[in-house]
Length: 404
Ligand code: FAS
Ligand code: PHB
Image (tube, rainbow, N blue to C red; front, side, top):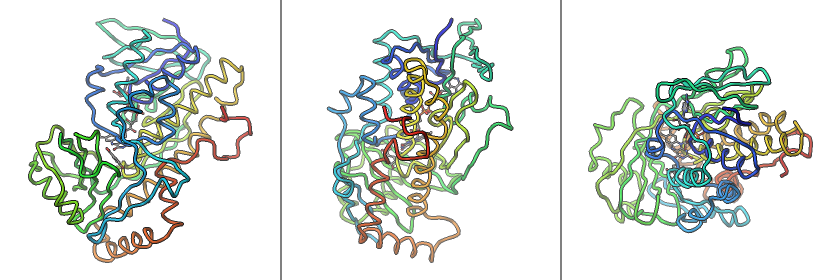
């Protein structure tokens, strides 16, 4: 088959890109190695920047997040046994974040794609991306015992950290930057009312980091920092609830409603960036190009901003007959990626226990947190990064790019 853009991966990046291109009249196919149910079954992000919410609306899937999402005007920081609110809305001139699970974002995009009858191949095996250094890239995959071939103008690598696209780039053409953190996050999903429905709670304690989030008013998402080699089997529900409550302030610990976990998993934490994000007619977007520790709630939101830049680039190419977007995509996307990498690294460093910094390190973290909650300047810096930096801050590109 022939199409204009072949998208590899049906996670949020691939699905959102497919929807934005469809809206612009650009033909595309999505090729995904897992089943749709498997993709939907992954429990991941929970907080959307306004830019992401606006992009969902632009893609024609903005209704459910408006009715089912929960808008947050603040976040809360717990340290030294006390909880402090950061008025994100007030500090950023009215910006907010929305609590709405990645699973729901994916479901909304999948439903829209299916309703539009757009070509999507699930359970594709042995996907390869070829000849992307020529004007005629080709994607091949196996399905139902047959090898299929897709000729296209461009390939969008939306296939996540372990995908085939970045792995197909010749070694000398790519530079990778990585930092692996010496701990993981044990995450629990439970059908209990969230202990905080108006703000995400981030806790720094001598026992380690804890996070209280939500998926709805009846479903909670909680995390505790755990050793990098820890095993889910070592964590009964009771042990998890006890440990989380010990990392919070007494009032919140007292109010927490506990119950059986419906999902429990450990995720490693890393910072990772691959440069550049374009290789001839192959473009990387989302986790295929970068990973952030989830502390700053940036992973899904960075994927969305990459897709905004990339969809604009393809629209410029096909509609405006301009190569500016394509030529500038990598530089524009990486500028925002690195600012999110910095913020995610900074907040992770501030909130977590590190093996070599017990004692003195804990006291310095508490001093920085005390300074932060009492400094309008530092609180504003936290707030403007948390709600998401603008899409079009100046990165020294020609003025007309990216202002669509
Ligand atoms: P994804 O990884 O979501 O999607 C890539 C898709 O490509 C997958 O469906 C995969 O099956 C497919 N694929 C892979 N290889 C392929 C191949 N060879 N051929 C075809 N398809 C292929 N972000 C937050 O903001 N907050 C969080 O709390 C948070 N928690 C996370 C927890 C975990 C365990 C993980 C792994 C990530 C978490 N993230 C979080 C980040 C996460 O939300 C990502 O940023 C987001 O899924 C990025 O979306 P995609 O770029 O679409 O990548
Ligand atoms: C989540 O709801 O999964 C979540 C929220 C905020 C974060 C990370 C994860 O910083």
